[in-house]
Structure formats: C-alpha cells, structure tokens
Amino acid sequence: MAYRETEKMRERKARARQNIIERTWECVAEGGFRSARITRIAGLAGVATGTIYRHFESREDLFAEIFRLATQREVDKVAEALNVSGNAVERLDNALRKFAQRALKGPMKAWALIAEPVDPKVEEERLVYRKAYASLFEQAIRDGIAEGCIPDQNARLASTCLVGAISESLVGPLSPTQTDIPPGQDNNEDELVNTIVCFCIRGLTGTRS
Amino acid sequence: MAYRETEKMRERKARARQNIIERTWECVAEGGFRSARITRIAGLAGVATGTIYRHFESREDLFAEIFRLATQREVDKVAEALNVSGNAVERLDNALRKFAQRALKGPMKAWALIAEPVDPKVEEERLVYRKAYASLFEQAIRDGIAEGCIPDQNARLASTCLVGAISESLVGPLSPTQTDIPPGQDNNEDELVNTIVCFCIRGLTGTRS
Image (cartoon, rainbow over all chains, first blue to last red; front, top):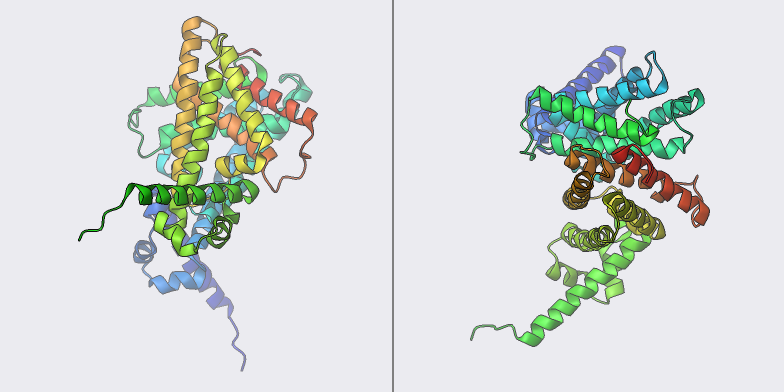
C-alpha cells in the first residue's frame, strides 16, 4: 500500500517548519546569523537537531530561506513607502527614510540582512534583493524624470547608487562592533537618517528635498 | 641537534609562498574566487596541494591573504588619486573616477573584490577595506568643508555614502552574469563612470563638479 501524506500530516509538517523558521529568526534578530546555531534553534523550537534537517537540507539552506523571508518584508515596506501621494522626490525621500529608520530600530536584524559576513549561499540572496530594492527605486526615478522633478539621468545606475549609499552608510551605525555612536539616542538617529537621505536626494537632483 | 632554519631556506620558503599567491591571484582574476580551486592553483604553481597547506592553514586563509594584498593595491591607488593638485571636490572626483575606471578595466578582478559572494572570512576583510576607503574619502571631505567647496556635513557618514554608491553601482556592470551592458564599449564605460561620479559629487555638494 503506497504511503499517502494526509492533509493533516501536511499541515503538521508546515507548522513544524514555520516554528523552526520563527525560532531561527529570533536567534538572528538577537545576535546575527553567526549566533544562530542549529543546536540552539532546535532547543528553542523544542525539536531534535535531526528534525531541522528533515525540513532544510543544510544550515545554509535554512539561513537562505530566513534571509529571503525577512528581506522580502523590507522590500515590501519600501514598495509601500514609495506608494504614497506626492511627487517622485517626496516618495523616494519617504522610502529611504523609512528604510533607514526601520534599520536603526532593529539594528541587529538589519546588520544581519545588510552587512553581516555570511555564507556565500546567503550572500547570493543578498545580491538578488539588492536588485529588488534597486528596481523599486529605478521606477520612482523614471517617474521623477517624467514629472520633471528629477533631472534626466540613467535611472537604473542612479537606483544602484541609492541602494549602495543607504546600505553602506548604515553598516557603520548598525555594526555590533561599532562603538562611537551610542545606541538609542534619538537625536543622533534623526541626524543620521537626515544626512543619509539628504545625500541620496542631492545625488539624484542636485538639491535638498 | 636543534633544527635551524637557514637564511637560504627562509628565502626559498618566501619565494614558494609568493608563487602560490601569484598563481591564486591569476585564477581569481580569471574567474573569481569560486574558480580558484586548490588543485588548480597547485597545478599552476607546480606544487602538490599539500604544499599549499604548509604555507596557508586553509583555502579561506589563502583567499583572505589574496584579498588583503589585492585590495590594498586599490586602496593605495585611491590614496594616490586623492593626492593630486586641485580642490577637494576635484581630488574626490579624480579618485572616484580612477576607482571606477580601474574596476571596469579588470571587471572580473573587481567583481571578486567588490561583490562576489565569498567565505565569511574573506567577507570580514571586505568590511575592513570598505572602512579604509571611507577613511580616505572622509579626510578629503573634511578638507573640502574647510576649503569651503563642500557644504558642512557629517564627513564620516558622507564618506560611507560614497563608498556604497560607487561599489554598488559597479556591481551590476561588473557582474559576470550581467548581460545588458556589452563589455568593452568605451563610450558606454565613459557614460557609466560619469553618471556614478556625478551622483557622488552631487550627493556631497549639491552641484556637478
């Protein structure tokens, strides 16, 4: 008699997988990918380490999945922040600002997603998502050129400049080893975000937004 | 009788090490770190694979060393390009331009150094060197603020925006999987470099250089 996976078993399997994903993300949010050891995740999830490997081929595969899920959330937030009223410069300003603010609010998460040295398999995902951010910015830049609020330029290249400028400038402030910017000082964070967004908008338009 | 390393043996060892380093760099320049397999490097160097591990603890250690040496050359070139006559904006323009031009002239090398997904040990080196570039830019930005050709701003943060914008915008054009920008078209490369440098200088100053 052939083995048949029932609906109930599939559901249980999906719930177990989801549980592993959530516990892994907790570890990453707390101490980056390096602190997310399989034994620790298994302990938090209340399963044997072998169970994790029934759901994910390897630690790298699990991490790549976590990376995809978490980064997609951030990409969606950027898309949402671009989808407000206002001209293209205002919308880009809003999206860049929100991106930086969210990153500074969850610095360890953002560090893990933006800059933590990770396995090449996860790094591949990072390159894919940097393109996803760039595509969103590119469309807004094209809108801005059409509207006349952004001077004519190579929108694609400019979009990658935005992605680079914002992520690289956050790497320092977000780094867990960074000590010269005290955490949780709001004024400091506002100034930080303003400086980064101002650089980006000036880079695009030649003027402050 | 204690074993004593003679001067001659030390020299021979240093030459053998140097040979391994040069052959590894040849592989990386040709196909990135992923194509630099130990068996291939050993073949090119004319040694047994075991010999490589007498000089370097692991493949990652060898790669980290290669990365340091190659990136230091690029950092030195940026320092040199900043050390010309002219005001700070002109010097930064020169340095950014040279960096991008050198990258586009040796696209595989630059891809390996800037963006190729690599082992975390090599990625750690990458973060160190991004700071080295940023420090050079930061000093030039401070000079520019003092000279009055760059508006007052957080020089440190702006320097990381420059590093991010220039490296991220080159990642696309340099990627070995990138197909939409045909290689070796000089006009295209000039336009590319101009666009990137223009974004950076505008980001700093609000005007074209």
